[in-house]
Structure formats: C-alpha cells, structure tokens
Length: 334
Image 1 (tube, rainbow, N blue to C red):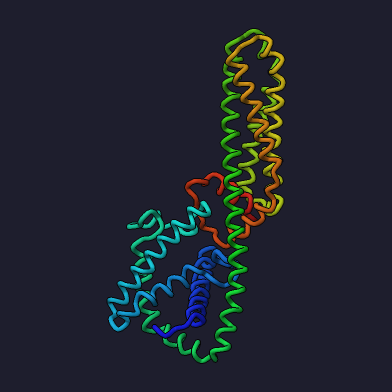
Image 2: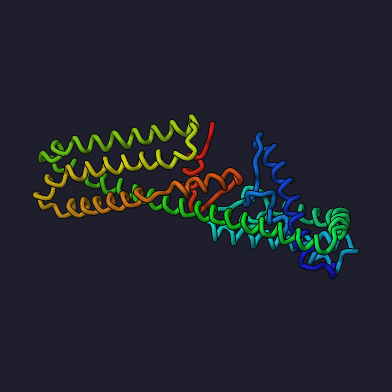
C-alpha cells in the first residue's frame, strides 16, 4: 500500500465512490419504491464513500494483519471523516444531506454508533476481501493507461462536482430568499393586525371607510392559505413553473396589503394619530421590500434546487426548515 502512486489512489477513490453510489441508489430506490439517482453529484459517484475508503486504507496500513485493529482504526477514521464532512456541508450549504438525529447514540446528528459500526465492518470487508482484487485489477492496466484513465475520470468528476456545488449553493440562496420573504410577510401581518386593532377601538368612522381594503386583505389571506393547503394535499405537478405560481400568490398577497395600506392613508394621516402613522409607514416599507424581493428572478435557482433535491430526498435543515419545506412541496409530482 505504501507504493501506490497518484493514479492508483485516484482510481481506488473513484471505484469506491462508484460502489457507494450503487449501494445508496439501491437502498434509497427500494425505500422510495422508485429509481433515485442518489448522491451529491449527477454521475455515479458518492465522494463520502470514496473518501471513507481512502481514509480506511491510510488508517489500516500499519495494522492490516490484525482484524480487530482494522475494525477499530477503520471505524475511527471513517467516523471522524463523516462528522467533519457533515459539519462542513451543513455550514456551507445550509442543509444536511444525512441526519442521524432520530437514531439512538448519535452525536449532533452527523454520526451515530450504528453507522460507525457499519464503517468498521466495511473496513474489515474491504481490507480482507475486496481491496486485493481491486488492487490487482488496477495493476492489470498498464501504467500509461492507468494515468490516462485517472486523468479522464478526474476531469469528468471535477466538472460534475462544480455543477453540483453550484446547484447546492442555488438551493441555499433560494432558501435564504424565501426565509427573508416569509419573515417580512409575518412582520407585515403583525403591523396590519396592530392597525386593525386600533381602528376597532376608534369607532369614529375610520373603520367603515377602510372596510373595503381590510375585507379584501383578510379574504385573500384566507384564500391564500386554502390554496396552499390544497396544493399540498393534491400534490399537483408544479415543476419548473412552481416558483412562478408561488411568486404570483405572494405578489397578490403583497398587492392586497398595499391596497389596504393605501386605502387607509388619507383617512388616518389627517387624524394625526402618531402610533397608527408609524405602523402604516412601516407597513408601506415592508410592502416595498417584499416587492423588491419577489421581483428578483429565482427560476434558475428553483430549477437547480429541484435537481439536487431529487437526488437527496432526505435532506433536512434546521436554519431554513420552513423554506426547504416550501421548495420540496413545490417540487413534488403526482
């Protein structure tokens, strides 16, 4: 093992990435009862398995003759790698591509005892059964062809990784925007509730004059919630136009709020009610901010996000849980 060159290490890495991809696709496809091209990348590679295999090889080189040592060192190395990879990916992309939070004896959801034992068993099987034939297969190829093959696969891998990385970043950008928009809508709703509460107390004719705007806004909020729930239950196909429909609903909600605020302006400002004036101005500011948010074109980010979510149906997010759920709902098919 000490004599492996760069091309051999690369070919080992890609081979075990491919084996991991086969295993994950089989497991998830059976679970989902449909074919799932599993993994972070588009192609038949799962880097966490390839990285884990290389880590196991490096960790077990000094102790490969001792079965228990292979199990323990492989388990330790792969577990540390899995924890670090999970932390980095969640920090970078805002989502977890695997989560052991519901499994007993887990650490922050990134690793768990069962998975670590699995890594140990995998280490023993790989070192004692699998790797020798793989090594012989690699060395069966001439050195020139090994180097050419390693370079060729590396180019494909880098291109795939670059594209997949951008999709993951697009998903994060989309979730950030949706989170900001949803928080602003909640603030807008609270401000309008305050204004309505004050108007209810005034009883001086302002309520009657503003009734049309308030009624329109309230009715739309109710209709918006009903339509959202209907889409969730029916699981209608939205796909690429999902973001357009979503943005249209949110835009209508904003316009209804704008109609409400503008309808109140003339009736409230002349009364010089400082508290209402302040809330009304903040409401108009929120409306303007929301308009700018939803004028931003997110179609590219939505399409990219849908691709990576299809390959990783079990992703989760603590920071962007609500936004991730919205994207997942919009991407559902019949």
